[in-house]
Image (tube, rainbow over all chains, first blue to last red; front, side, top):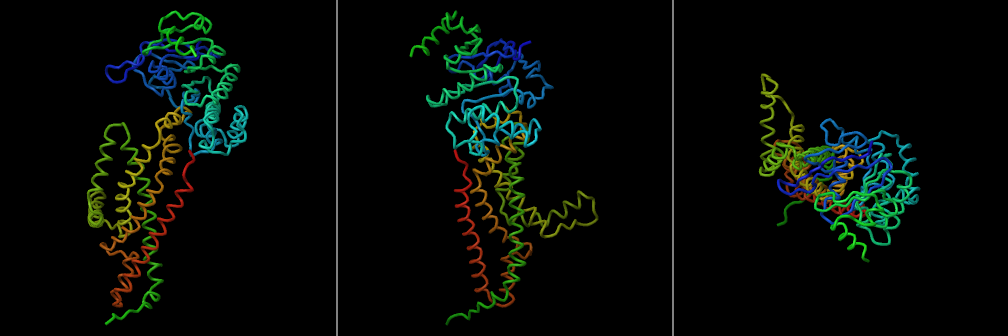
Length: 245
Length: 230
């Protein structure tokens, strides 16, 4: 059974503008799927539907067998099991790094402070930021903040991770440090859905690539096939534009 | 000819002025500020809510309070609440609320309208992504508000909140209309009794100035220290 499954997901903004058009795909346990496409194609909206941050009007999404949009679904509980990393990090600026990692653990999972601290410390070590535990987010660089954001999501022991353009807001020299953490995570067998323009990352770790345009999933194929010869003109055009330099 | 000035009257009445008058003024200020901030935050959340009825209800309340003179509200509550209580409790006679309780309720309700506008601006100043990030780790709406949005909003708005509290400190002197002895009332009592109007009113002005001015300086230095590093 797939970890994330979407069937005919449609979403409209207002009565006329359709951002998602019958999107159907699935992500298996341990699979890494990269979602790419031109800006405004609905990639971010699509993955925000997975943890219910964006509502959708028709279709269905299930995560680990639980239907996201069903009436009886405990959304906070479901979201606690899905990690999410945002383009602009969204660390909590009034909390120390260590408390950013502990908040969800203690308030949502009910872990003790000591337990949460131990987990947080281990994760900070994993993303190479041990010595920054007592700093505030504003004192870290963009790349460091994004690694903290990844650690914050991992602190909840998620069954899957969603990445919404995790490197788009970073200075070029900081992109690698974040991608390295993500590559390591992929190798550890995490189920990942990644919206990104980093095609190097996609080639290296993605099992499949989804190409979206104008709210539609145009291609959904194994990575080698996608980069070898995209079937659609639109994907070819997109790749030629972003791979040309 | 110079008027006959006797500053000894101040020294003689200091215990009365501060132990009774000022302690009442400060108690009322602190409690009303706290209550106003709590109720104001709730009103702000109602105004920002997408649920039906809540927003117009809060907006109506805020507009009503801000359109009435404070003195009128103080009077209104003092004279009307006993009758309202009588009707609600089906009592034989008007319910005694007491001047202090009446003043506290009035100031809390009145200040809440102002604090709610401050908190609304503060909450709206927090990026939408913070809400999403809170939801994403599994927090509920109230947890996101309580742990993430409101703490940041309060910190961003702290200077304005404290400035509003200084204004409240000065406004509490209006309780004289319901014959409560606050600091100004105490000074006034002594002034009338001893015929020392000039001395006592000059002294009262100096005390209000000293407290308000040093408080606003304090706000300024606090602002520097509590700013969240970004």
